[in-house]
Length: 402
Image 1 (cartoon, rainbow, N blue to C red):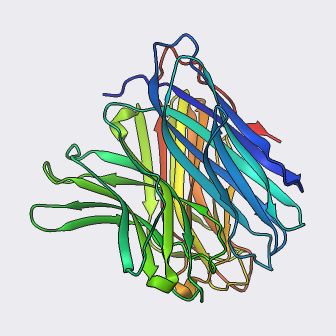
Image 2 (image 1 turned 60 degrees about the horizontal axis):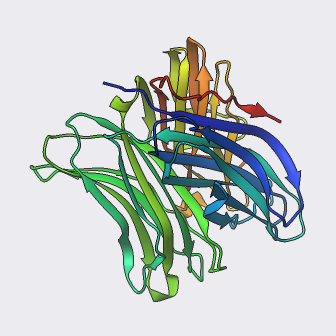
């Protein structure tokens, strides 16, 4: 049975232009716990989407809590000549917050180059950790070395409740040394469960391929849901690195894994479309819809994960999260990878929103920047969770449009 959880959030939607190398705060979320009963563990879940307009320009993002850095990465994906490309940074972290006011910020600045860059949108969610949730982290920098194929960076096991569905959220910072940019090297996120019969239940997320080693770390994130089958087998939550040998080493640092059972929430709606769906600009088809869900008047956690690519490396494939109801989430993720090379960019978008009692169509939508080359979206997952109210939490902070 769901119990009351402390829940804080803030989002900002709209393009802001900058040309400065000095960090500025784009979004702040305040978790005001003044007067609460002691310290508690909280999951902090963030996304921040930026866009640059020149192949030599890079943006960087910093994630801070009460002035302490917990993540910093630069936008280093390949530039698309057909459209200024965007990149979504994902940060998650579990922290103990005492009974005072806490400030969580997403800051941004120019990393290199002379061109301007834009902040598109960002969200910060702060959710109290329940007794039933699971968390694992590994922050040390590790490389694949001479190993080829997938090797574990994090492998966390726990015994699930039979039939329980878990919201799985992952993030890490990664860099690849693929000198030729020809191999599919990168990061994979998985939830696996071995049954007594030997059958393997496997939810896997695909690869991130980086350019030749440039010393930049990128954030990679995933969000999906996973249902436990059987009463005894453990679930393995894994972040894996895929190296191509000593000359194509992959590095990983600051890896985090969260698993939250749906039973922690008052109501949880979910949908998925795991297969590839191709789109051109004129189509703008929807990949996943939680159609006309009747939501109660309450705070909700909305989280979406997907992979994007394109037929042509000169064009961008992208996906975004929207709602056909009164609340709009124009949160875009661009990518200019070559789908024929099986190179996919993966990320998640998270929002906290206070909804009225109404019907909503939450959608993940795929598209392409070109009418001649198709964009591709796969592994699209969407979860909408109603947060049980906590009478002690001053939680409602509304989306800011700029």
